[in-house]
Image (cartoon, rainbow, N blue to C red):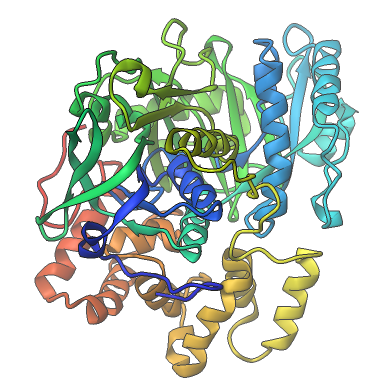
Length: 560
């Protein structure tokens, strides 16, 4: 594992977790748990974090790849949520500027819907609530005010826009991100400040002693062994599993959750460079987002009553969603075979009385001390964008419950590990010049944009063995050095960890048997996999590529 400033990065070591007593144990390594571990570690608490799967592999990975204020929440008069989201957007641009970048949006206006005056008024308020959007060091990160465009101006930017009854469009800006890598950066930042973390570590029991929660039983899903991890406070950041964890400790009042399923598809590029927001069925909206040379299209919003771990996307759902896309954007002319990749996520909603699309995306913090279970706090709901803010409030509460001094939060100005100061474009240009000849220029750009300042650690591997610069798939930027780096420095222990989250190699479609075998061989050489294990890892990845729930190699397939 790599070494961060001032501390050694621990390996995935559950025996070490069992040997210590922590101030805080975080259950859940999605964006909420990751941000909490980072904040609490920065404030001097001894922190442990466990997740039953890979870090950021569930809800946090199944987003629309956006960091945004939630323009549509203005319609629901959630001004406080929108302001908080816009503030957090700016903060994430500051502390993770290599992963959170501006993205222009076109919002068409029509004669009988999304009327021009309504959109203008909404975006005026959006700009007003985002008054600090230009307070950023990097000039390219500063977001302009919205503009109202004529029909000719809008179609000049995106000629394939559906123009029936269209009167023009609004141009505004939010941000794109790579949520899998951003979540990992929060985890990495926490470990740089002393946190102990482990993926594939499932909590099977909450242990109460002397009237309070004192420890948890953790199963290492890779070995089957159980460990007891002790902590003064436990925060349940289990996302769609949060209510199930609360039941383990016999909480006297249920955590009320409604689960919403959202699916996304990846296709050939349908727009030039703008994200397009289009009206969908039943008053919903459809996003067509430029992403890694493709279009990312989402999302559905339907209530989900199944087990979160059994979530998948079947062919019927894809076909139905393709019909919705074609109706909203006829130029797409998609068929199900044109879908290169599909994925689904479960959003935990705390607004149980509304339809899932209209339900609030606010978060909720439950202090179980008042419910008879001392030592436990549950956090649920919320948006990816506001997770840092939620973590700040959680850390404040943990400090208060522990009787620790009120240490100020520093996460609004402390850069995450890969973040650089100044203009990121200038940084990229400098890196390309300094490393001329080390590897293909497009590959190098991809490394810098993915890892930020940490790209040098990947280049060190290539300088030691130039064969690691070889692309995994011809014509694609991902290289073999990233596989080694993922295993040695980023807790990757399954093939899916590498191809779906550390590199995203498989998120643009099936990379082919040869590519999966190559990655499995590189990983297997470091993790001791035999031929049977490599084939089991590949089979598990193929199931995920076909929309089935992710599982560990060797585990039985899960229901959908």
